[in-house]
Length: 59
Image (cartoon, rainbow, N blue to C red):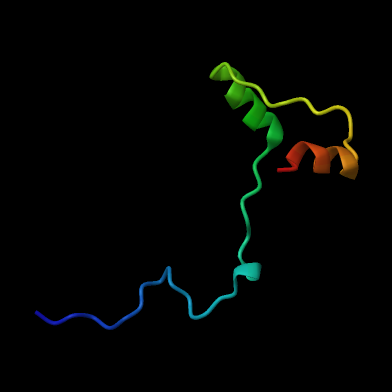
């Protein structure tokens, strides 16, 4: 049985990743989906300073 050396149409020659469109989810849809499962995102209303973050993640 002979094998074909033809490239499939889905594989384009050396296309950079920056040229391809990227998926960006709609956050409202994501929150709705989480709500159906009984989950929710954390609500970070207050911005944290660098010192606070260093203190939190210090080992």
